[in-house]
Length: 190
Length: 222
Image (tube, rainbow over all chains, first blue to last red; front, side, top):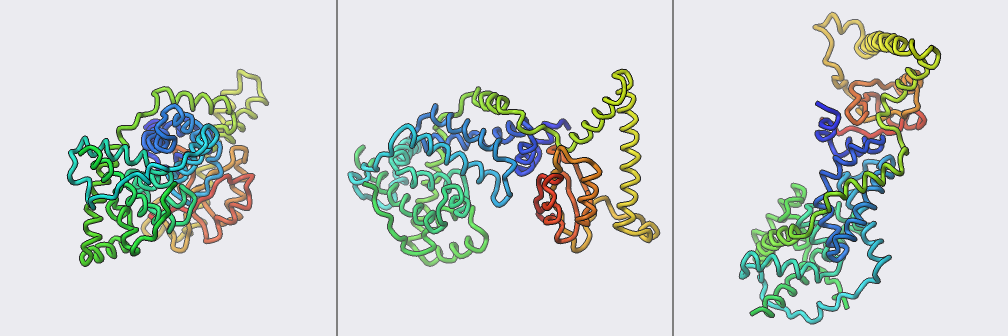
């Protein structure tokens, strides 16, 4: 087994420890493990701008490289990396564009309790994508981190830096808003 | 304007996203299941969340992937910032010893000196191993059916993942381990980590020597 193969078989913690020891191979292994999903999360955070998401990704992995020796093992490596990347993405957004208020919500009509069941698959995907994009960043990220990235609520609290109860309430309200938006979108098309 | 946050009707309703994602602990998942049996509203919510989850997966996966050269750009940036740390910390003190030995001799003799040091190192490991074994298990162990497997757990011991500082000498590492009452039972891993076993306070004792021990972390019991 080569050194690279051993790294690929190692736990996330061992890979991070190897990064802390200066292994660039280990950084590549971590990138291969987390890169795709992390990038999709960052694209959502920066409003769909892939170039800006790449900037955030680059900043994030450089920061992971720099701070790996300080990792204390209090959380999962994936949670730690997502937290760093989120911070980098939001810093870029704040630097490049002032935040915009979430105004579209006011115009959305409340509708049927189960709006997804009546949609075709492609239609549902596009409508959910639009509805997700229209959510506030705080609501969007908690929906994605729970339903797509499969983080626990404790991990999400750590990534976004807020209390666990806030995460739960935010997820509840995000669902309410998604439901309204999807009902509004479905109503517009019919 | 962003809509104000509303309080959910009850605790179980707030757990449903993690319930459908399968990321709740067993106790909470069981509590949610029990609640769902008696709450029609939450059952409908759960069904809708499952559909929403599928749709969110599909929607998020339509997002672009990073450019194929992004990793190379990150690597170049890291390379430009290097050398921050030398790789392979476990081998580093050894490399330094070989380098030092080489510096004492003419370039033509350096490889022979290095070879000699390798032989010496294997000898030292054998002697040290024998002593550690004797210390850990006592001479009686050899008369009771042979030694336990290398790194076999000893009751009451704690196991740690440890990285030694690249600049630490073998002598200092040995002294710090002895002071902590600890011993190396496995390693180095591909990442340069050792598994160290010792008494309950071993981690703190090792952390008192940051010049020698760069990283200490308790290992999960296997």
